[in-house]
Amino acid sequence: MKQYIHETYQFPVLAKLKYLIVGRQVELIVYVENFSKWERALLQYSNEATKFGKYYPLLLGFIKTHVLPRKEKSYGSNVRYYHLFKPCNIKTMSYSISLTVYEDNIFKHLTKTQGISDDAMASDISKYYREQNLRGPEWVSVVSLDKIFIAVVIYGVSSPFWKRYQQISPEIKTLFTAAIERLSKEAVEYSLEHHKIKEGKILFMDFQSNDDTVFVVVVRSIDKWEDLLISS
Image (tube, rainbow, N blue to C red; front, side, top):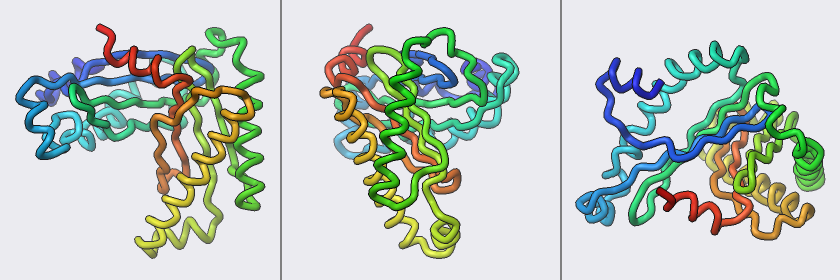
């Protein structure tokens, strides 16, 4: 599918697929763009100098238009949510992670032992939301994918009033986004602490107001995540 985009649109190869893991209804992919020496030097002047960051919006559009329909057909399940986080830059590379959430638990046979603890973490997040916000999200999904990643999707965090108000006031939208991300961070960290995942750390978090959905990627250990990044 990547090759299809490259050939059809003569689109540059922005990043390589570093890691792919699935569980229950979630697919997580790690993308990495390694920098050349001149790109490392250029990075100190502008974060947008990296190809991955510059073409991120276009790549996201191509994936939604051309890749996801093909994956839905191959897996026989519709995509409920998709999110590609904006790339992050470090000295030697740029990296990002995508989350694809399908309507059906098409990978459930690969993670049979995780369901109970994942559901308990989702309950923790909902509980924290209700305690702090007097209103819980409509739906929370937590999926432990392997010894490194936990994917969290929180849907339905805005009341009808706040949904409407965000559309007419850019300032309120910015403020509300920051508040929701803060509340989500606290809720996820509360759940990690409750389940004694002491080294757990939120790697990516993004609230998509149009979808009223918060996407979160947690790593169980930052050391394991860094080892994965630098591995050949």
